[in-house]
Length: 276
Image (cartoon, rainbow, N blue to C red):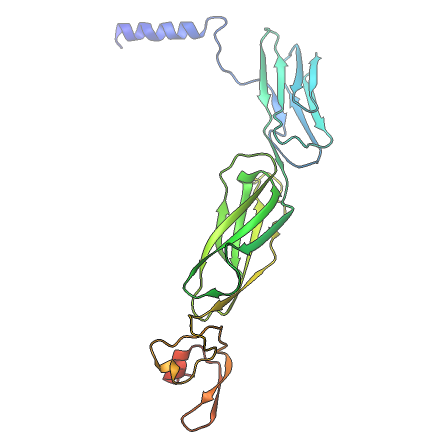
């Protein structure tokens, strides 16, 4: 090694060993539990313990703080009803060499929503096939937002899952929006949304809250005729307004002059082809 580089490293090592130079060692305390997830208004209790022989210990916190306790090896922070959204408890210890260090206790204070509701955004009434619409899920009084998961359902199928990148800790009202497009022959469709707090593998698992279902009627195209005729089914622009029940429908008279009763027919095209 070059002599100048070797001397530089020796100087750095000597500097770090001089009295009064911080070494950034971790604080010799242990928090039990090391992290708490508390429902709004519930109680909490955490021990702060040290294996050293300190001059004293305590908790620095806006609610339930404990002043310096001398000649002890642990102090317990206890609150009967935690309702401070921004609380940041710190256990501190005064060492024999006159220094002091602290350990912050991570706290997640959570609250499940008061209500979850779903509604069309800027629209009322039936929806047309092939056109885009928006649905909005409104969630009232929830925290923390960064732990919220919103799931959207169409019938029993999950069609979208949304999360939030927001560190707000206080109670908030929020919403989730999706864009939907319907296909032909869907008829009646049911949507709902669900709000859930994901508080991590070690946290509690609050029950998800689901909105009441939103039932949507899907109309096909734009003709005022509410029932397709056998003749119109052969044209390229055959269209009608209302959802049509192709499962069991009484159709217009056939070429023989008798009514045709179809059972299990899926689409008008199948009627044309005679594949029922």
